[in-house]
Length: 219
Image 1 (cartoon, rainbow, N blue to C red):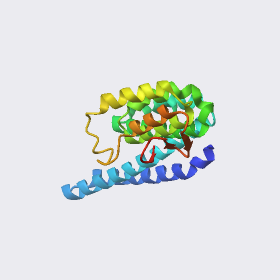
Image 2: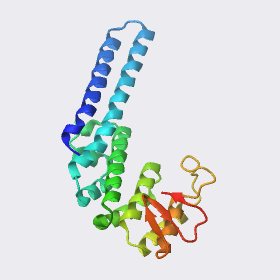
Image 3: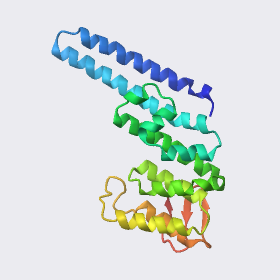
Image 4: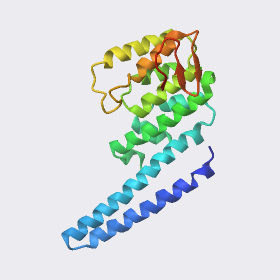
């Protein structure tokens, strides 16, 4: 979680950014339509690679910025896409396309969730923010939220059970085929059973073991 560890990411971002700029210039100079389109497509491909490494850098920057501060990580859970980019002082933050800002937001939230889970009970003040995020339909965020709640929340956790009951009811009719395989229960339902159990349950490595559950699910 040091700035020095960002150097390999900076190298890749710079490398692909330069290649994108080189093919942009080539596209401008081309007279033939097919050659021009090929150069443009290549430039866009390198730009996408640069953006991908920027996502990794955002993920890393949250750790560098927050270190062991649960309040800092909780802040990144609440920030909208544009606010998150500005908070990390990303270059041209105000000019980023919405889909890029959203990708960066997910990367920042994913890192924050991981670190809050590692902090466990020390991050108890983040529980309300975590419960707010249980409504997310983005799989990476949902999985991270449930892992973090398992580590952060007390057992039993009545407000966890109530919130997950509400989410399950509100989302039970949604099409989840893209998020869960047909034979798996929705993740909030698994977590809800765990929080309702209290005594007789144990947790280890982000896995909920429920006394009455017939199956074991990793959340």
